[in-house]
Length: 242
Image (cartoon, rainbow, N blue to C red; front, side, top):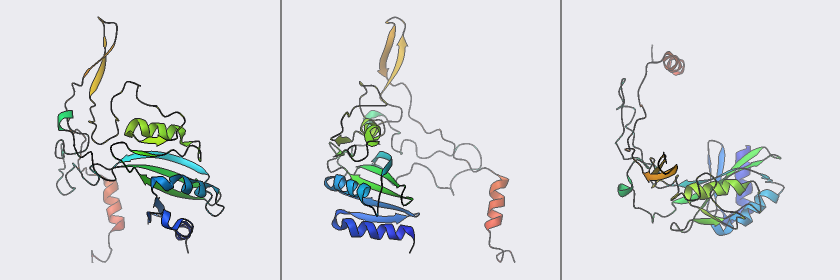
């Protein structure tokens, strides 16, 4: 039995009904727990000798609005020169404020994801917890379990608006204190809502409505490259050419 399968069996045996799901993909294990069970599971993951996930590598927020949707054309439709644009404005964030997505009541929209490391057993684990209320997304703070979560939780609060209940100093960390909205939410336009400039008459920085037009400018071009041709030749079926 490999190490990944052993970890899955240990997690299922220890937490049983507390696990909403336990999955494996690309040799990585992800478990999902309810907000009410997060602290108990976190302490057990850290303190159990057979698990010993003593280090928090990262904690981030996720907004699943528009998950699985793509604004790009498929590889069969792209051209070999110029720009092959996706459907303009179809992707999350590429819209003006009046045309923003309105599906604010989407169930299981916001989640906090923890990435853990066990130095003792040399393995990793991903823990995901969905916010129960999408109007006020909230999950318990894990700063009491892993103090390194302090700034990570502030970042997720700043960018996604996820409130971490019990955090000792939950405030913005990347945007300024007067910033309106949460920039990583999928219903927040990529160009933003306001822009700043220096006003020489007032001799200070002022805010004004954003003047940039939303557009897609990322090139999507199929280029001839000998590296790709060589890789294709090396992986080709030798019997097919005979």
